[in-house]
Length: 206
Length: 176
Image (cartoon, rainbow over all chains, first blue to last red; front, side, top):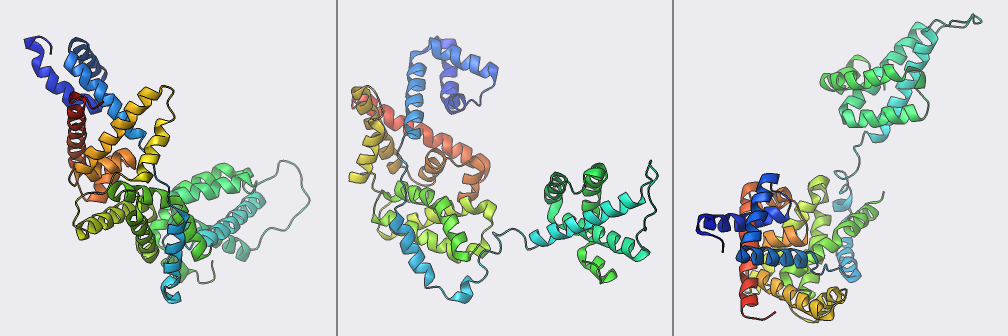
């Protein structure tokens, strides 16, 4: 025990032991804690004991599940009726949209590339080429819209992944900046608009 | 991914943690195996209702509840932290030390820690096991036990203090 003016600190030290060992005390509190422990043998013992307890808690055995437990569980669940089994993994699978939006995104972005590239003015004289028809442009725009719509629905994270994949595959390298901007801004906007409305207005799209 | 393959993957991911929790409630015993098996079956039957992100918490809650149910049914309020399996497991850890005497002392200390944990009532024992053995966060423990975060902190603090108090008594008695 330390001097009489410091007696209240013993209870504070005891209360702060876990935080001290867990590294949750601020620098000033650490100094206060350690200064007291240096001067107080009972708190020093308490800290030493706490350290040993924490260390040994961490070294307590971890039990491994015997294979037989798993096999018995499987035997039991195999007796479940097939109709109970059908869609158990639906919530744990990737969203149903996963493959569909990837395809739509790829198609849409490819179309966007085609449109942008074809409409850009070339610095070098080029042989005459055929511009896409109005219908083709409209279809490409719809595809891009649909891709954005689905991307929006699957969230910004998915959009980022899809964008990254497309970039890595070299699909949209020439207009990377444009697509990045679109992915960021349009995904959120289309999410709000709703897929059904789009499908209603553009029955041929998607 | 077939349904069974998916389930097998999940089981492989979580089965040791489930069984470990059972052992800390019931002792490494046939009871622990039976409860772990029941947890896996319940996981299967509730797959469509469990959010994958909250799966660990869900499993901890179900496992703990089943363990407590079994203890109540057997009119026991604690598991059995003894038996050959448990001693062997403690021995295995102790053998890792260089100094045999220190190893023995620490093994005895671990045994005392387990006895002290065994003597605690819920939710202190549960919180201690979930935090120190299962290494769950305060937030996860709160969700598993239906307790506010701050309550988890306070209970954990009390549980650790009680653990030290019990151990200190043994130290004072010269047991190690």
